[in-house]
Image (tube, rainbow over all chains, first blue to last red):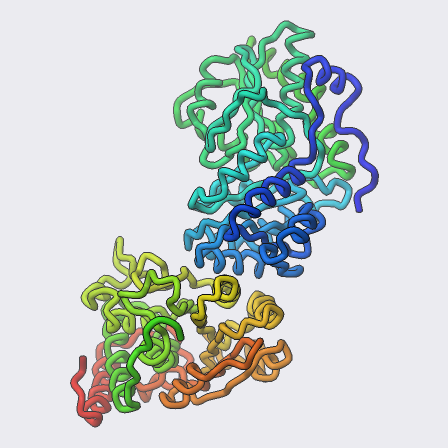
Length: 337
Length: 286
């Protein structure tokens, strides 16, 4: 499918990760599929729906192990979500899995009416999200999904940043009783959290403490914020806080306000258009609380997206250790004027 | 049908109920100043047969997992459904006086806030897929109940209907029945002129469905079709040939009554016709 992807990390970034003792893990998608299989073996009410997407969803082993619990819908995303709603209405614990680009655009009305408005506890799983499909082009990118779903009442939006968050988010989604959107990419990810870390649904996770810059990031961008934070500390003696914000809605407003109060500047980072996602959610929270933070949203700009792999696109738009380091320095310089 | 069977009613009783339902539906639409009059009148006999002859749902069984499920995909004709649910005791009929009012749950399309309603609908082309999910769950759990949806014929232009139709046949959902309120009119005019979906029967047959075509105002035929044993492994579509505006002479087959609200004179005339029909059957207006 995609051309061989160049590395997501520069040599310097990889060295920085080594210095931090970070270990490269697996793609979140694989951890999602394994976790779900573990849970479904013990609970026959758990069902997975796919739209000809079991391969890309890493769900072939699930289908082989539990064929009765995997329902193939075919290339029909509206039907996928409608059927998921009906199964949810009959008390099944449903995970409807489809590429995020199609799931949250073509089926948006089904998500809005059949799941969210009708209040069925279905988990929608957007796979290969953001620009994971890279060079396949914008038809296959989902840079709108957080904005679209944030504008719909009654659906939780969760974007895990590493394998630990993924496993915890999947477990939390089963039986949480409300509609959930889980968003996964397919790149292998560094582990971000210490073994003793506790995942609390709807709360930010502090990856690193600091007082100069606060990076508030979500999903596959959190690692780049962490590397930038370490780089800024090493090269400029700046202390940087890094918050992973897996739950984009409802937002952990307390963590955002605390970051703005305790740090000199706030940078948000997301694999999404700069409109309507995590950044604007944080901005809205800060503005309405009367917080006066130096603030920058890093994401994909409102333009025809540059072509290339996910790594190319991230680098182009400054979602990288180098890019975020520069953004933070510029913002701090502005803060001091 | 699973759980307890409802007692069957005579054609005369059903006919009387339909006239009373039509009278009450017009009353609440007139009072609210809004509603889908023509389609409500065309599907009223179908709803009457469903709730009084077919579905094993009642206020006592509405939370029973073995209940039959009904999803009204043509959600805009909710006033007809409200009237039938009130008659079946899901809520006091006085609540219908709040139709379309501030903070009322009785809005212009079905929501689960109203007792007896299973699914929020209103955007067309959604109900059948939801019913496919309900029917799949029912098969998996061997519940033995039956799943029903009601679609308009204009609604069949939605592509999502045919995604669901394909899926229902693929999964061999013989516990699923789709009813098409085939009144041949939609808001703009004749369905065949707007974007023809005829022949509907052949389309469903080609999608692998068992097809029944009935007179949608014939209580015996509707009852027989909706209670018929399914063809093993096939979902059923009942194409109910109906008249939009049925029961009020000047509304019948006239497109402007799609969501027309009668003025005082029209309302009085409609009630006169309905009350005459009720009197002929030896009944009273409510």
